Amino acid sequence: MLYARNGQGKAYGVDNASDYYIGVLVDDGETPRIFLIENSNPSQAEYWSKTYEATEKWTELPIGLDRASLREKIGITTEVSA
Image (cartoon, rainbow, N blue to C red):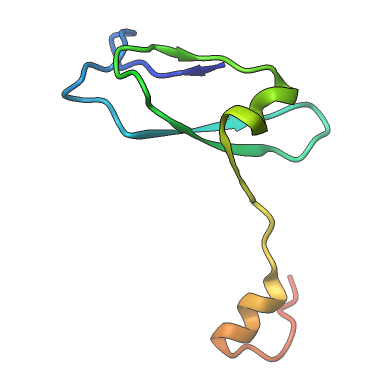
């Protein structure tokens, strides 16, 4: 469930609502999943979905990071050690 509420616990009104919300699904032992959720009703305070239906209802955003590609783009040619 994604709560779309302001600091007073109420749904955002038409004047304050965003066009989209970002929701993060976190399950124990799993990589978090990020979803872009369109705000189709500014007075709606909660968005619900079963885990297996989330990708059908909302847009899933990848969180993978290709570090080799990033190093190549900015010109780093050696590995950075921790």
